[in-house]
Picture (spheres, helix red, strand yellow):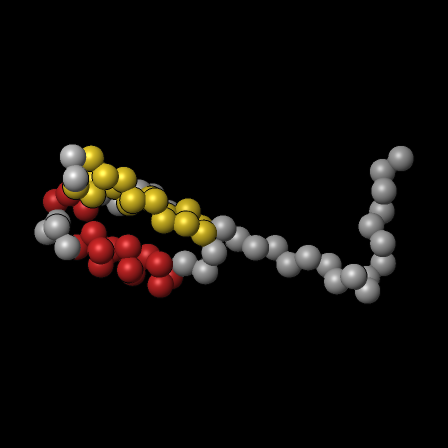
Length: 64
């Protein structure tokens, strides 16, 4: 997702933006950037978790 610039919105809208993005995020982080005591940017980083093999499966192949 691309960064969101909430500077054109009313001051409380950044909190709504963060809340909505957090609700849609399963794994990841949200970075809030502040300049001169104002929220100027919100970045959402989404991580995708890849399931690992169970320990009962065959051993991994090794490269000689």
